Image 1 (spheres, rainbow, N blue to C red):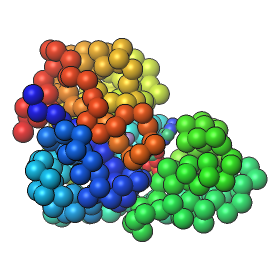
Image 2: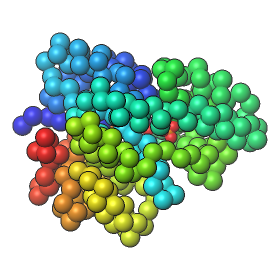
Image 3: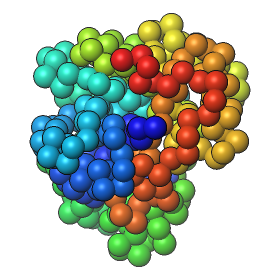
Image 4: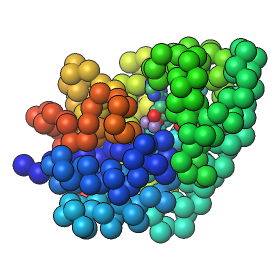
Amino acid sequence: MPKYDLHSHSTYSDGLLTPDEVVRRAAVRGVDFFALTDHDETAGLAEARLAAQDAGITLIPGAELSVSWESHTLHILGLRIDEANADLDAGLASIRSGRDARAHRIAAGLEEAGIEGAYEGARRYVTSDRLISRTHFARHLVESGYAKDTKDVFKRFLTPGKPGYVKHAWATLSDAVDWIHGAGGVAVVAHPGRYKVSPTGMRRLLGEFRDAGGDGIEVLSPSHTPAQFAEYSAYARVFGLAASCGSDYHGPGEGWLDLGDLPDMPAGVTPIWTRW
Ligand code: AMP
Ligand code: MN
Ligand code: MN
Ligand code: MN
């Protein structure tokens, strides 16, 4: 059975490996169909495509779009997108454009908590001028001894209610789905188990997503427990959504799941690749 890994990051967002390196690592690890899905960014896809041709695997061009829904930030994966599409490109640029001002506000919040110079510190970890993220702050804060690891740094500094968390308006859910569809792609709710919503909220979210034309949800993700693999398979069936799988790989030493290391898709779901 071919191996799919449909969620990963490179140095064009908050990953540690270049697109070339991440594609080659996926190929070595036996992945047949591989999606690079940088946050709000498609600039790494050209390099990934060349590497995939060379390594003999299939690149699924993707992106992971930041979305504000109710009081939550959601991530919506666009898979099999045409990154040359002008509306998608403009949409992604609009999402990215708020990130630098947000980063200054994050640094101001951290400064009030006694942490000086966090903006400049985070910048040292940025690998693409086009994108700064909380991950870059996290790497800086760990390296500077403010927290023991990234999990700890998010818990203490970068999540709602903590000094380095700022509210931010990302894209709307319907805009994100429309840009992805306009570019010929399919839209997938990334790691639904990560959102702090009640069961009623999850049903409302998936209902709105489906009504906006959304195609699938990520069932297999390192953000999910095995119990959640089953739970989100059931949601997929109930809402008529396809199921996706991805390691959300960010680089060596980041996260606990390496490229391609995913269990088989649970029985009874429609894999997202049958929709393309
Ligand atoms: P941003 O898009 O700037 O809000 O950054 C979000 C990124 O931070 C995610 O894509 C993850 O890579 C990382 N992240 C979020 N929450 C956590 C967490 N609890 N532990 C480690 N990394 C996290
Ligand atoms: Mn990330
Ligand atoms: Mn995500
Ligand atoms: Mn991701």
